[in-house]
Amino acid sequence: GAGVSQSPSNKVTEKGKDVELRCDPISGHTALYWYRQSLGQGLEFLIYFQGNSAPDKSGLPSDRFSAERTGGSVSTLTIQRTQQEDSAVYLCASSSLGGYTFGSGTRLTVV
Amino acid sequence: GENVEQHPSTLSVQEGDSAVIKCTYSDSASNYFPWYKQELGKGPQLIIDIRSNVGEKKDQRIAVTLNKTAKHFSLHITETQPEDSAVYFCAASNFGNEKLTFGTGTRLTIIP
Image 1: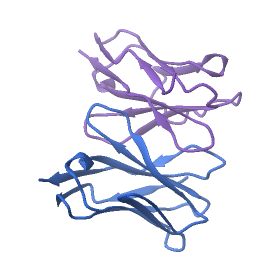
Image 2 (image 1 turned 135 degrees about the vertical axis):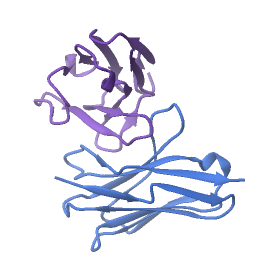
Image 3 (image 1 turned 90 degrees about the horizontal axis):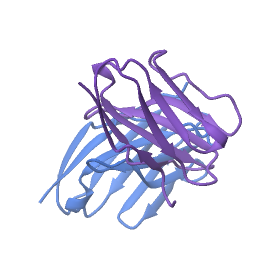
């Protein structure tokens, strides 16, 4: 497609459940990023994939968070044993030697 | 690592007036400075960017200026319109690294 696609757009889950968020980057973009944005706040870096290099996981807030990128394309962000403080919009972006293109995000609500 | 500060956090201007948002960065190796606009319920969108080999770039009502010596850059919006109301983020990176460091955002409100 022409842009970065994220699914689902909204997710409500019970505390303690696991969730998976998906990102389809722009075809050919070698870099993929996950950010978290709490209500009215800035962009919190989570993880960065660049080609075949080891991912930069320095922003992951705890070991309950993990991400993978299969075949250099689609990425999945997994949050295990969700907590209420995980409620936020999770944004994915991709790039290729330039500015990011962001998806519309997944709004996660943990109840 | 890089640290980007952004001011002001909120800004209200009358329709038709100009708006200016300022950012400073800490890493002198940074050489790429994009600006993003985020409308309610959407992801941020790139609106303009500048590389360190130029001091100013314009695109219609939007301009960005860069002062490498002082390590600051600014977004200027002229003849503001209601559709300019949004949150704006500045960012910086070393272009070869690609990973951006974002400012904390400015909520711009245009008053009709």
